Length: 172
Image 1: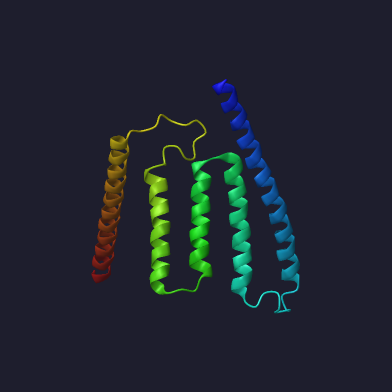
Image 2: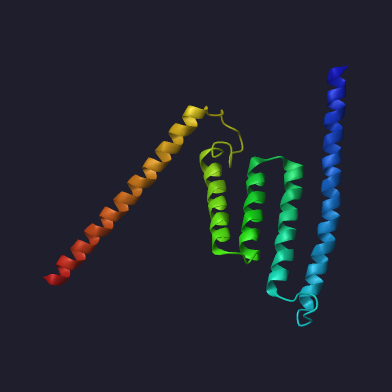
C-alpha cells in the first residue's frame, strides 16, 4: 500500500510540475509577444523609459525559460544555468555600488568553480560516471589547480625565452 501511495504521489508531483511549466510557458509567450511589440514602438518612451527596462524584461524572460527547463528536465546543469543568468542579470541590470558588482562577480566565480570542480564528472556526459568520493574530488581539484599553475609557468617561461631571442636577434 505504501509503495502504491508513493507512486501515486510521484505521478501527481510530476503532473503538477508540468502543469506549472505549462502555465509559465503561456505567461512567457504573452510577455515575449508584448516585448516584441513594444520594441517596434521604441520611439514611444512611455513603454520603456530606458534601455535598462528593456534589458530587465528580456533577462526576466530568459530566466523564465530556464526555470521551465529546470522544472521539466531536473538537471544540475540547468540549475547552474539559472543561477548564472540570475546573477548576471543582477550585475548588468542593477546600477548599484561597485562592491555589489564585486560580490556578484565573486558569486559567479563561485558558481563556475563549484560547477567545474564538484559537478564536472556528471556534467556534459550522456552516461553518468561512477560518482567520485569526496577525497577523490579534492584530489582532482588539487590536480586541476596544479596543472593550471604549471601551464601558466610554462607559458611565462616560453614568452620570456621568445622575448630574449627577439632582443638578442635585434641587438646583433
